[in-house]
Image (cartoon, rainbow, N blue to C red; front, side, top):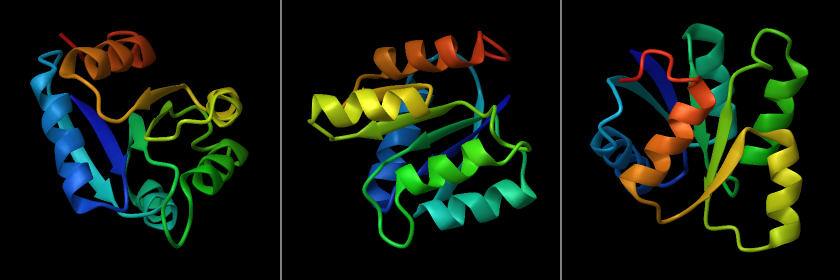
Length: 127
C-alpha cells in the first residue's frame, strides 16, 4: 500500500483527487490530506509518504515553495511530487516540471492519474 499525501487548499478538490485516484483501479492507497505546503511539510516530519499530489496556488505556503523545501531536504528530496493544477501557462508548467516528477491538469481522468502514479512509483505496490 502506498501512502499518498494530497495537498490542496480546497477540501472538495482533495476529496475529488482521492476519489479519482481510488477509481484508477491500480492498487490500494492510504491518503493523508494537507490544505497547504506548510501543513504538508509538518506531515512529512511525522509520517512516511511515498508520493505527493500537490496544487500550486495555496495560501500560507504555495506548492512551489513546498516543493523547493522538499527538494532542499535530503530526507525527503527523492519523494515523487506530481503537480495537479489548473495552471495554463506553458512556461510555468515547464518550469514546474523541472522541479517535480510531472504535471497533471485539473480535471483529469482515473486512467490518466493512474498511469502517472504507476510511472512515478515504478509499479511499486501497485497492481
